[in-house]
Image (cartoon, rainbow over all chains, first blue to last red; front, side):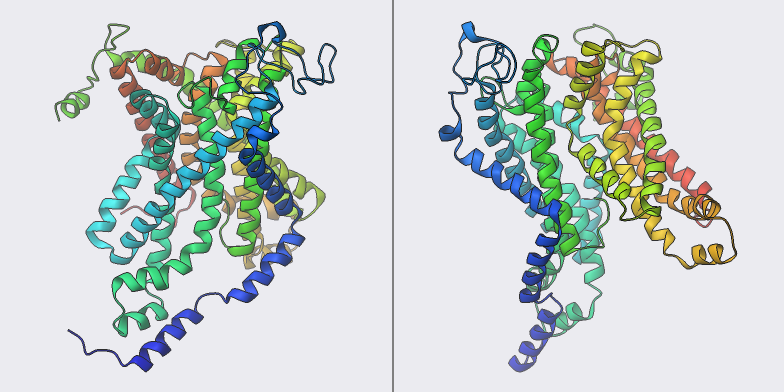
Length: 310
Length: 241
């Protein structure tokens, strides 16, 4: 057991270690100026916020019940075309359901699954990556080999296989996406941890008797958090795309729950007679993903310009 | 263990639906998927390399901004939506191209475009970033100082060195393409491995599902090995010992 460290020295060492982290106030100022500079970031943020508001207040915003069928009013075109009316702004689908209302309600599923799958996989990935990079050795080997094996399978193929076995439901989709998502974060965190562990301030913290736990979470984690936030943002966009792909294949969210991918799947059969069934939900997906990607790009320029294409 | 032993002997079980060994069923579909993936890769490199190079050379111009915006759009577009929109425009409205099936070159155009867009966007961004990196190097300035024409400096000196990381990405891109093929093949009724996998899942034909996943992974790993070897050939400094 080492001699208990002198409290003054410990304080100095931690102050030094803290100095290695970017100062908080100047970072906040850069946040604001970069936000103003980057129009794309603003547009992206606006799209994301709009999405969140729409998702939260869907029952109030939607003009109709998204499940309300009316066979007499099926396949009505959007309002601005002949035959369309103000009643159904974006038209109705093959069962007479209001498309606008379904898109509004569909945003809930997309955002929920996109966010939750990242929220579940990111901490696991970062934790494992940091541990692997810090301790190296056997733990590192095992973690990274598992990651390699998983990367050898195209993710979407793996996802549809698991979805096929487990059965389609929103919970299973989140689970599949979370299980598939951790690798990216683990590899990133591991790489950062490998280089950080050689840095002087980590050595200082260790020399002063800082435990592994303290070093990992107090000194290393703050230094890897920026690239993680950037990659996590792109991750949400990616997961929304994957969720809609699964739902499109019929392996994700099941009807009658409105989901954008599912709407596209339904509308595909009517492509020759009713283009609006597929065009609008797809546009909703693209706009949402684009908005998140804009935000991710902006965050990257702001937090970590070294990160190139992710 | 029993499964692994038999798999190594090329026996992946029998398809429940077709009542045949699963492996030949998958291999039979392999050429169609390979054709589609390679066509998509070809399209994306054909577009992405020039677009990325010009974007880097004319950095921060309107062209550059537009290309980067386009690339971001490309990366945000759901593959299946793009496919449906292309069918809607070119097959249903303009009646120029067939909606589905495999056949001549005209059958290949829409699926290849659909599948290739995401990769195009990613590779464009990568080529641009790589070029910007290389252009800042001293040896580029030396080449320019020697009085070499710009075109020669860019193509011979800069592009060549940019291509090395790009080749690595192509290997990974193949994984994206093989995965994306699942969806593209479903939309265009393309008789490849992807569609086989999807129908097998819906028919609960698990031996067949297993075979498709394993074969796809194997193809992916082998093509990445090929890329690694290519890497050593492109950059003689890299030696495998």
